[in-house]
Image 1 (cartoon, rainbow, N blue to C red):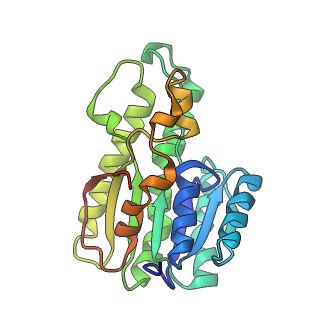
Image 2 (cartoon, rainbow, N blue to C red):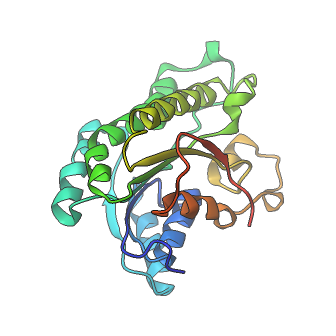
Length: 237
């Protein structure tokens, strides 16, 4: 398992769920992972799991993606330590609340826009130069098939993820003539805390575990990947 040997990868929302599973898989494939999340304890648990499996110790960056100034500091910090970035995984997201749009509180809307959309734009802005310094920069963002459904009461989440899809597709078009490859991933129904909050009556054991959908992330992170500007649905291993 050495498909990412020597690669430097930044993963947001890496303290649990899909982000944690991707972090551990990337480390197992030989990457050095930079992990961000708000929960320091969660990041430390993921790092412990990586070390226990024989992986390289991770770089832990406690970060609240609602704080744009802190996001902007990532670029200079990564440049100073590593000189480049090979892989960006924009995984962090919030559900908001499920309910009629007319009943949605402004703070809920603003947080969802800040985390699901604006934070990813800021990551793009500050990290594009570092991805261009890589011989094969790769970026992928976790979105959702809910944007295709237009389901009642999912407006906050669906609107911000639809915005993310457009943002990433535009960025991919801008980078079409560079070595950087950019894609979107729809994970589908996966056993995460967010899914449990959205579907409290669902049997979690009927869903894919986050560890079962990491193949697509590795495929898109490899230097040899040629896919670009696509939406890829994660398949169960």
